[in-house]
Image 1 (cartoon, rainbow over the protein chains, first blue to last red):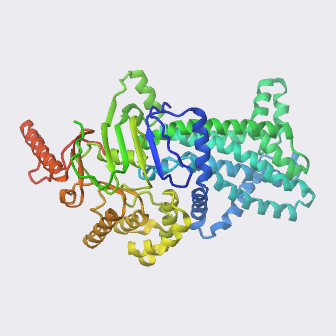
Image 2: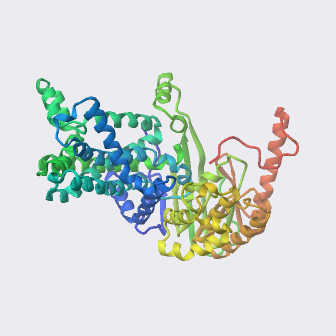
Image 3: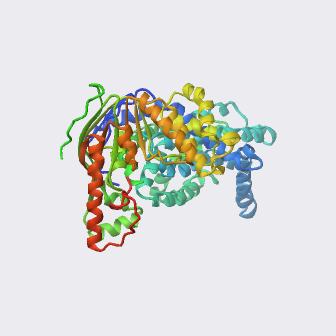
Length: 299
Length: 282
């Protein structure tokens, strides 16, 4: 993508700028990133409204409404338990396979909906973007945040299932779930901001991400333990390395450590992922802000 | 042509200053929708045509002024408004705006179909950057003015076109901006609401620091504006008193119609002025 347009020098310290100067002079990378972060922070209420609108919509047309937040992950778990556990007979190797899968389904559903909705977050607001000036960065940020809420609700059935069927897995490590969720949030933000902007210029991105997401899920240790891949890739260090570099290997592993195994997660892996994600978010914000002035023209 | 400043200024305070403003649409960027198109484009080595929707526009608007923007379709009127609103960033030149802006560019679009009227009002307020307490305070007034009735709690997708337009107008004019940008909003809704909205716009003209308004209603320009801009082919053809500018616009339109007739372009006699010009809506 080659956004040729230039950038605004809009000062947005208050919610609505009392004055602005818009010129063809392009601000530097640092002030772009700073400006982007400032915009998001100053428009917290708009983001909150967008998140609420998102959630309200998700349940409004269905009979069971928000009950689906609890049902969705459970039904998806059931699909995998039937498919992998009963038909393929591969779940037997892992004890308590339903809980094992649910640990991965919950965070993945969040990521999937954040990226899936995030891709079209800018494009779907086309008409608004051509009418009102507002920082476009709030759109991908709010779709990512909306997933946090449904993830939090998904923890309720997880806890219930653990209490009823898998009492042995319950541990104090459950309390650290939010910590891993923060790492996931930062990672998701970077991805969503990037794809939302890219989709404005190339609508293919939307189609592509759907398939990439599915492939990513199956290539990550969601339905199977990470050891399985290590076994397969014993003679192939490249695959083993790639697998280890997959952010979702780290994230699924961490969630599973806390929920399923009741042990400490791989702290170094999480710390590295967090650091990489922060850098990714900064780069994503920079690229987004560079492309932002072209949105109204290209859409 | 340079802008001549002939009218008596309402005050000396400059609220909008545009200097050699230009907006370029890179057609290569706007047309390309998929990666395939872009590759085809590269392979065929098609040139990269640029289109200047607006160029070399310099003018100032003083506090208390009401400026009418007229010109044929596709001349760059809406583009000018979008730049002033901050929606488009100039490719050339500078625009400086001093004061809170409310842009009422097209009514009723941008609503969230699945949300109720009330939620849409709140969301629109948040998008415009209005403090939420102010929005809550004005909520009853907005609902009442829009004449939506009990439908206000129903999703927007159940609204008629007229209801949407009324709600959009009601939201956009509920803010008290220093500078109001209006794009052909005087022709929405039924006759009764049109009267009402005209009255409201006039009220805002009196309240606001400055108004820039795009319209095809020449009577409005001569009656309520104290200055006018004629835009043709992306350039300011004339900037001066409303009578003068409207006169010039009418002359040019007549010339263009005569020219079109000569070329043998099929044209309906009954067409109103303002329907000529090139494609492209800003």
